Length: 481
Image (cartoon, rainbow, N blue to C red; front, side):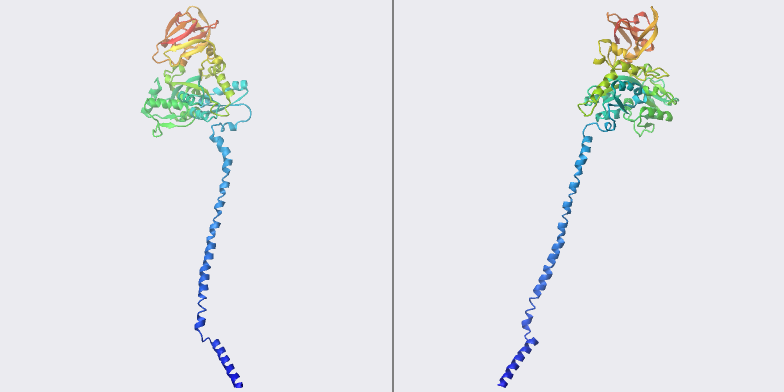
């Protein structure tokens, strides 16, 4: 029995020992096969999560919504208020600087300011209408650009072609003649181009170009600059900076004359500004155009000034009432007289000659017509004549002797009508049909010949030094032949 128990114990011991020794190695080697699977899975599976999070920056790229600066760009609406008015054709730039109260913006050429004319006549308007006139004095080209923006109420300029276009383009409804003077060619006293005594601007410009004498231009797009360019065009020259003798300054008439005076150069100037600067241009002299407008034989040098109110239908903010008041005031006999009375002290020459035509406000029956070989036919009322430069002279009639006559110089009226170069005589016609002829050359020599006012309201010609037939009573028409 004991022996049997011992054998059972021994068998159990052997089984335990063999289990611990791992003899059945093939069985355990199969379990490790599963581990490779887990090790293979985790590494490959784990990377997938790691890749996913790194791809997650795509959400961080969602700052594309932070391109919501588009909302911050929304200031564009706030810019809009500023931009809109500038784009719109409403006057802002000049008007924005004005104080409160009534203001009228006058855009004009430098010659009306440089000559001193505006300083003489504008106080009368400001007092009568209790309105301040703000003067913007630039070249005619710039003055018209200001009007084209609606930044002025009224324009006073001198370039007829551009003025007519200004009206045609709708920037003004009408243009009015208001005054005129003439252009002259001035230059150094030694006159290297030898133009003194020439009668036309064309001939003098040819000589200047041929001798390559220094010429200085305003070069500012003004009426004077435009007139100068027309003369160059008539001789087939286009002035450019490549021409060493031609200089462009880009300044107003006053500054330009002062510069020319220092350089001793030729230039084209308006007589009004020239006369207003007697002591400042001592190195220059008038070489073409004569010492007065009556001596200027070149009608191409005639220089008319036009007045235009800016069209209120085209722009907002125009001072319509005062612009209309200003036009009527400038054309009135009283203001026209002020213009004619503004003279150079040394020579007693007017700097500008009144040129307003009768309107409804200064109307009445036409008292005198100047017709025939003229560029601009004249139909003048008695009020219009009295509004011009009126002189009082003591003249001798061939039969009646000396007496006082008051009226307008006949040559001023002929200049206003722009007599054609082919004309040789004048025919005076009276209200009863009586006519008499006088030679134009004799009239041009007669500085004191007048269309005079008679006490009964009629007109007469006062012609000192001529026969009695030239002294026409009840004058109604002058025909240039």
